[in-house]
Image (cartoon, rainbow, N blue to C red):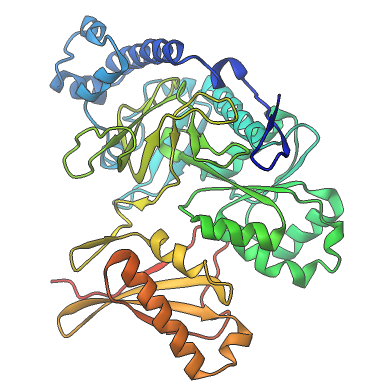
Length: 450
């Protein structure tokens, strides 16, 4: 299938599982209800934690599950939090015996205990197919070579992309994170056409590429799929310009499977949620009230097609919104906006909610600044304040204190216009701030605790 875009360029549209990706709305809702009921029956019978939770919500007998008539009835079910997962460490959230579990992944927990995620053989197969679906939606296929610079191991990114790329028929280079010079050697010698990593690491590679690649014409890289942390469109434009690629966003959580929950297609107009596998809601993070389409709040997801560890109304803490407009690619799944931030990463300063992505959108919009920043929070004279550390490019930094002061004042004014809080802006020499080869750390909170 080929679609003409607004610039009259032909964009090939490929599907890995067209039956599901373009499913009629009513057909999709019927499938979701059926899979939701099956999931509820599974956890009710095989998971004491959920049997008790569902009992508190009025489901005290398995026949009570039949009272769910449409997908909106999910709002009557209880939420699941990360704390629930930590408190049921290690296997209390599993709905299958260990004999059926073929793989364990884990992510950091809120109290020092990791959050354990289990997978059956079927779960791995479904996950691989979802990832293949996503890679295909970004325009990749069996003739592509994917360099996987996500971390392998307990983190889901590495193996999630690896299995998906192999499912699609791609050639996979399992590089993992780090080994910068080797990354570029493999990229040049083997002819990598796509790279998978965090956006922070993609930016690091973009800043380093000219040190290791003398002839950029030898690089065949055309696409990058980046996730595992919120990132702005300004950062996307930086990466695309520096690496000369198309950059795509992907979204997932270790608790719900890993990468594979939502993805951008070639139009990069919001992230399609794989609704046949995950039921999304947006709630008010303070009240738990379900919000309408288009409103911004916390994303809640329910597993619809998982055996080992299905989760009911899992509170992701990620801030976004949903919209139903059909995409030009033909996919019928609901889309979500790029993640704005997290409820637990949100900065509250002088009663104002601030997300790092808001600061990033300003910093990365200036050509004369390095794509790096640090948000410092501190207390002075009993008042909480904010300082934004920036890096002017070398030629700008060399202009001296007067020019740097002008830039600092301009950025401070832009930040005030956007978030309504006065900020200090401090310029440091280029390459002063730490670069990340994994998830970036953008906030240093030194406020005095009362």
